[in-house]
Length: 341
Ligand code: DAH
View (cartoon, rainbow, N blue to C red):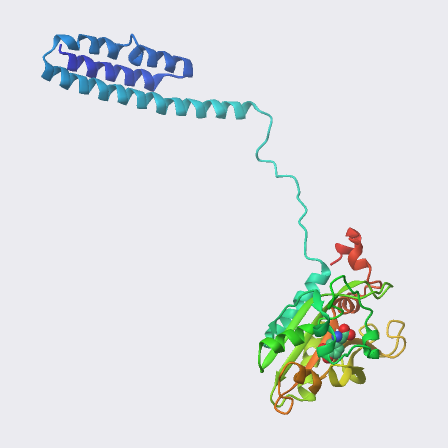
């Protein structure tokens, strides 16, 4: 028999052995037997010297191919054996992989975040877009350009945190976003601006940091009726279709005329109770028609344009809607409170 036939026979032999082997150790023995330094293939290659160069080349190639093939068979078989081993191990182990995993408690949005988002969504649905402004604000935007001059008593309405930087304050309300928006965009403008505001206050209905949403709509021919209609629609979305609203004359430096907006008491439906202090009404926000002085400060012609603005406290809305008796509960982080919403 020629060398070529010997080689092919070796290959067939190896293939059979590898196919029937059941453990890694025997597999390694097969590797040594065929591919080792003194293995079968080496033996064949040794006798190559007796051949002519042409034959040597031919048989040499066949021997190499067969070597590669056996190597591949060994490698594949090893992978199969390893997998079997792992399976055996898992079978022996006590872990039941079908048991449900440990319960992981998921968090959820804080009630203030939810309330804020809900309010913003109502205005987005009415065609308003969302603007934001910085919490460290220029005094000029927070006061002067909103028609609150220096040394004017109206500055005392808001207990301000001043900071070490001349000309800047922690914004006391979201109204400066009105100024920023009108400096940037010419009418028509319809925006809401949610965010944190700061005042030096602390009692059951006030915290030094709280949240507001500002609203501003400016265009030609905007009147008090647009203001009332928009706020009525908004408040009925939040508190239910059955509530009534009432506008009371008030004073804000940046609106003229100005109004406090009340809703009929959500507890007693207007009959009079402890929550509404017997009046039947709950105050929910401040609003008014944009003062011409504000338009002038931002370079908008008050003869051509009119508009309305409003500002409301998110905490106050959430307190009324969910009957939260103390504003500080929102910030204690007590899970017994947080989990209720
Ligand atoms: N900025 C006022 C405050 O914080 C609230 C307010 C009242 C905003 C009337 C307005 C407005 O835009 O028109 O007390």
